[in-house]
Length: 310
Image (cartoon, rainbow, N blue to C red):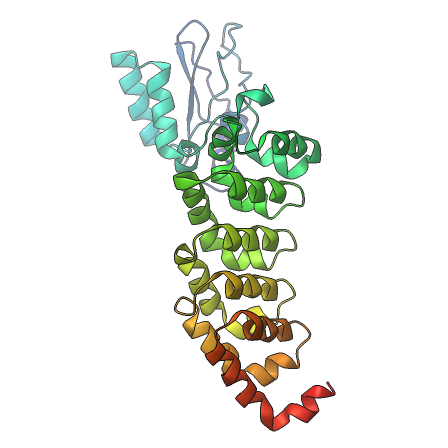
């Protein structure tokens, strides 16, 4: 009803339509619902940013879209099928929302911001660019405040990106401190696979060390495995990676760190000569079991005089 008709010059631009910065595999179509309940559809490139802008097209009869909608990058065949269902069954806006959510898995994981922020549309990634907003959220992240769970649900999908930013990394660290039980476990599971990216970051490494400090050592195996895959020497010689290894040595058991500790002992002399790696050996001597200390001493004795002057 009252569908806008594409103009010839617009039809010529169909093949170059970019959605969300990516070239779709097929021509795409967007559908929306007007304020009077009628349906609209548009198949050309002037509805930008995946449909977040209301279309301004001739033939709309002056009606405006009731809400801005995401197109979901539906192919024309899919859009036609959706249109047929809407025409025959009068599909509600809720069903359209369900289709959109199904086509965008990341949106299904999102949660609204906590009520104290007073903005239902605020995205969690806004924390990355706003020290003031981070300060407001941090003030509410105390153990006795029930809003802490709402904050966790809001930031969980973007936790890794927030952990890499200067101000928002403090929000993620505080969440690890004040949120317990399944919520903290879920946050740890979101961060663990990004261990390498986090330890290499001047901000993310603080989040990773906080995770090591507050989580049970038995749950840190994913972090250890990521480090083993990256290479123990690479991590030990990294400006921030050595800090993560220090916390792991402090807070993990010999059984959990056995393979890494074997590697540290075998490369003890090389690590002792490195400006960052030496801290890993020092921590293993201080916090490791007596057997590890004896192994390191035996490894260093042949070159002890040279190391003493290094």
